[in-house]
Image 1 (cartoon, rainbow, N blue to C red):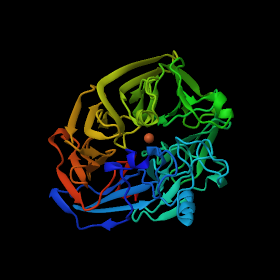
Image 2 (cartoon, helix red, strand yellow):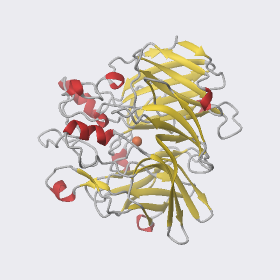
Image 3 (cartoon, helix red, strand yellow):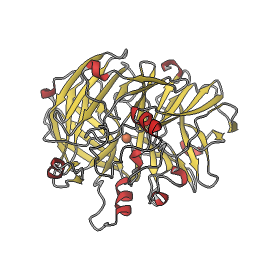
Image 4 (cartoon, rainbow, N blue to C red):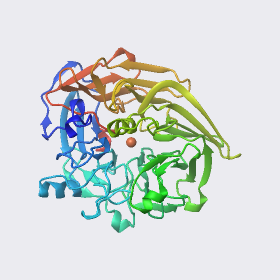
Length: 470
Ligand SMILES: [Fe+2]
């Protein structure tokens, strides 16, 4: 079974070595005014999975490219989670995966329903001078040294009275605050909070939901945070029997909860919209008494009912046909307007961290290869969110990018005055490289390619940290 699993083979096959490499071949040039570190998280199972492996199950591994005055250093390290440490001690995988059933005879797990391993494989942010590695289903915040990726323990959520923290917590890079939420099968079904720029808990409230939900991200503006209650969640009756079957409910609305950054839980205002699932947002902003949210929307994340065999259903759940979309919430009337913005399938959007939540106009999205059974990014689109025009680069046959952040050049004087960086996996050569684009000319192709003598599998989320953050 595992030998056929698309997420354990080919480009997605895990790597086992942890390396630091600084004598790297470059085609083109590494700009001297690109200074900082590109961090990317992703699943990389250490041991042979003992169940039906889902791409969300692998142990977190951070890949980092440090840029300094025209030189690049690459390094990678596992996130030394409590679960991984226990499995290393045992010499084999212990916890089942997302597609398996809970095994309550095992040591208690983590996540929103308490039986999975917190693999910390999903996202990461740099906050208060440290890398925080995060788990999509809500877990710990694993701290890493931003220069060496060495473990520095965990965020001390217990002493703050915080239950857990979900992957798409976001840093407001203008204030340095970390905005976070979690979700759980146990009440409160959602919590929301804020850590200050120096790591103190400054806000933490429960959010009332009709039942357990599975939101993936939040969004924020200068004054507000936007939380989500989407019609994708566990079958409630089965959940009572500890069967975790995820169901999409097209008969229900999507709901967006808008709350002041330091608002009380019961002050949240809910806005209805058409049913959908949202993994990732580009940005949000305030415009008078309106809040505009740009993101990538899937009409239905679930496999069609006619897809019956288990392997095809697993692949269908991990495929993604999201497209650019805009929701406009009118704070005066309580109404929502919504519209598709583009026909291309795109996901993993990132905007300049300095403009996220304020006035970001450009979003750098990964174009999804719709011919692949695994999630692969065959192109890069820089969207102008005002006009929806896109500046597009295709990576070519067999080459697949990672989530690609914008990296401002030194003394940058415009939102897009800088670069876009990405790890690119090449199935033709079984190699990988770091590609650097001029953010104002994405379709010209990379200005620099740093060839890696090791493979970097595709992964999940990334963060660009300018040198001053580290
Ligand atoms: Fe995500």
